Image (cartoon, rainbow, N blue to C red; front, side, top):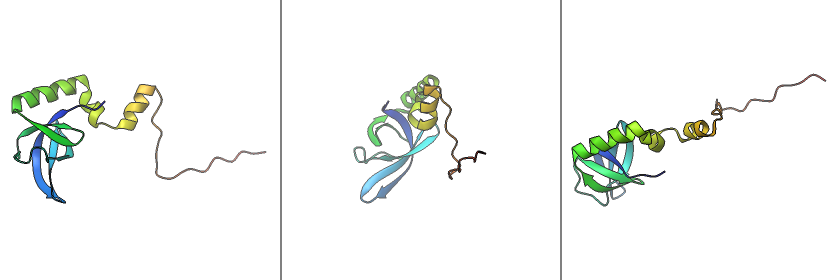
Amino acid sequence: MCLAVPGRVESIREEDGTVMADVSFGGVRKKVCLAYLPDIAIGEYVIVHVGFAIQRLDEQSAVDTIEQFRELGILDEEFGDGFALAAEQSGRPLPQSGGTAQAPKETSR
């Protein structure tokens, strides 16, 4: 699912000629493009869709929405570990990754 999620602008910078921000979504920070809202200030709230801030939002509305999303599990769905969520939904365990493949065990003949 891909929602428009409210978040608080924590920092603003320019990257390759584009205004970018670090935005906090209830504790999860993501890099967001501010091209559509270049006059946003640090501390303001924005609605973000697919990595773009698309609308300014008042603080109370943002906080209320974030809390409702948290209660419904939407923040975990949007920002959590997608592999763990898929494994949970399938009823299968998440494969263990150690970074190296293990050789198959030898069997006696």
